[in-house]
Amino acid sequence: MQKEQRKFNYRDFPWWFPAMVLIAIITTYTIITRENYTEAFNFIKVGLGVTVQTTFWAFLLALLFGLLAGLARISHNVVLKNLATLYVELVRGIPMLVLIFFIALVGVPALVNGMNALGNWITSIGLQAVATPFLLVQNKDVSMNLRAIIALSVTYGAFLAEIFRAGIQSIGKGQMEAARSQGMSYPQAMRFVILPQAIRNVLPALGNDFVSMLKDSSLVSVLAVRDITQVARLYAGHSFRYQEAYITLAVMYLTMTVALSLLVKLIERRIRKDEH
Image (tube, rainbow, N blue to C red; front, side, top):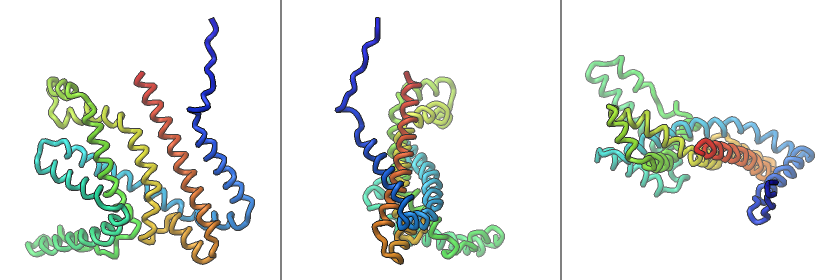
């Protein structure tokens, strides 16, 4: 018996994707064939490495902050739970651009000053060798690139905390009870039983947040970090070719985000396939 042929469903077909690919092809052809666009691309691509590095390191730190805050959110320790909740609600209640300014220009200097004060106190009790690392750190030594990474990681850590919390709580309570009945401590059960399953469940969401961070990394240009957004602004400012600069910039972001989004969808499809 022959298998029934599946009819092409025009309604469910993702027409947006071919449209985006067509836009990318046309724009790429324009960049290659038109001198003004080629010049703009060659100028802007210098900041590509900074954009990628900033996003990568900020996301790694955000994963750490998010995991710790997510675990604290479900903790039975009242202090840890409330501190983590305060962190999440503060970050979610303040615009990201304001947070970037605050963390980079207020938070980091306050942290450095605190380290210096700690170093002075340690020196006063006669432990000069221990105090030296705290005293050597100065505000001018912390680059804007590093401040941008810290700002993005702290901001996104709050959003990832909620993803981790939801992922952990999606695992049935029986899993924890079974692990504890085998003689595991709570940290061991969380590490070897609960977290591996939870992280597997939230991988697609983490991938989507990585794509979002790549786009939001453009905000660090306000700190004069020479990412592609800042370099595009500089090019447009001195050449007055705003169309070439910002069309090229938009296509560069579009290409990166679409490629990453497809990768996330492939991972999600692979996870669902393995589950079946």
